[in-house]
Amino acid sequence: MAASEIHGHGQHAGMWVFPDATVISQDISAKTRSMPKPFTIALAVTGILFILGVVGFVARAADSGFDEIAPWGYYMAMFSMVFMVTSAAPLAAVAFRFTKSHWRRPLSRVSELFSIIGILNVAMFIPLMLVLPSLDNPAGVVEGQLELRRTIWIEGPIGAPLAWDFLGVLFLALTSMAILWVSAMPDMAESRDTATGFRGWVYRRLSSNWYGTKRQWNAQKAGLALLGAFYFMIMIFVHFEISSDYAQSLIPGWKDSIFPVIYSVTSIQMALGAILITMFIMRRWGGYEGYYGKAPFWSASKVLLGVTLLWIYHLFAFFITFWYGRMEVEQNIIKYLITDTYAIVFLVNLVFTFVAPFVILIWNPVRRSAWGPSLAGLLALIGGLAFNIRIFVGSANAAPGAKLYDSFMEHVPAPVYPDVWDVFMVIGGISAAIFIYLAASKLLPLLSLWEVKEGTMYQKWGKLFRGEYLILAKPE
Image 1 (tube, helix red, strand yellow):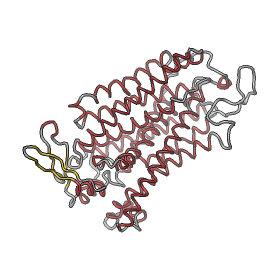
Image 2 (cartoon, helix red, strand yellow; image 1 turned 180 degrees about the vertical axis):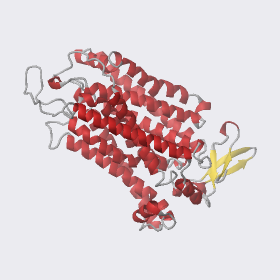
Image 3 (cartoon, helix red, strand yellow; image 1 turned 180 degrees about the horizontal axis):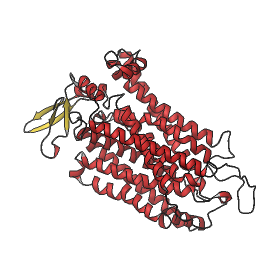
Image 4 (cartoon, helix red, strand yellow; image 1 turned 45 degrees about the vertical axis):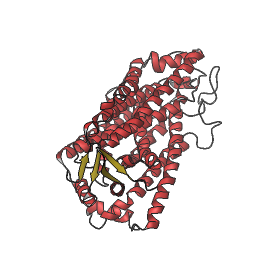
């Protein structure tokens, strides 16, 4: 390895790597500047698909306008898919810093870099503000209808729900980008005198006051802790807003305190899956094998398994509550979202979100590999897409017109299938997120240099009698 020595034997072969701190900066800087052919092709393909998504959006707007929410169900599902992954991804760096996990060092920047896609989230959310029905019943109150449709906004406070939802998405994006800035500042400062072009301009503007004093390092540590705690709180609140306003409130009679938790758990699972896939691509084809042993995958797989089990637990809690209730509206909601209308989509969701990842992650030889947890993460992303289609397409088309203000769902609606513009928007929106991430990886290094360098000072490979072990220092 150019920048690393790999140790371990048997089942632990390649588990730990020991990068050479003297060449890390030069090596990663060269990788950040380079534009290999596979990367260029990926950037071009996702860019073209991004344009197709814009075409689909414009065609949908010209054909259906913004008066009804039903035609925008697949756009809602696409937005939620991107939002769930990119909003929860920075939490990985935050959470594993809190726990002082040594294995998370190569993972931190990969997760933080998803913050830049928060700009896309804000832009994509604006059309959803235009199509969300009013809290007030515009047709007036008639028998069987509500004056205000059921939402989390008791008596409709000022600006509810649009202003609060938008501010939540905006603040979440700004907070995540603040975490990225504070974390990347030492790396930008190290390269600001040698970086050229736009990258050099950004580095000099964003790290001009960083000189690496002890006071600055202490301030950075405290800042990351405070921003991380605030980010976790606001993320859960915004997930609660989106899952309530754009899902539950659009299906008459759907009242459930468990669903927002399912939404957040699914988000965390998908985000961790996306991080694992990114790390695997970097290790396998990006030239980062000298910085990624199997340890980050092995350790993250345990977290992914726990989140997967949390998902099935909360799904069971959701289902059993409605199934035992036996009220007509509860039975109709189960039929609509699970057993009848979107039964096939639910099965795809169940298999790819729980069954397949669970089978992979309980198999020890696979879990100790780099590809096993990454495959489980890919499956979780597919399951997450099915989850969003089932929930948000179903919610947008559950109660057209004045039926939205009915006290409960009287019959089970039929499924809604995508047309060509829906397909363009879904593929284009996901591709837009990938395109932005790829472009961002050429602005900031995919590896947190200061954290990896710090880690090299805390670890070494040692022997005791006939065994070989990783010796890890705990400075705190």
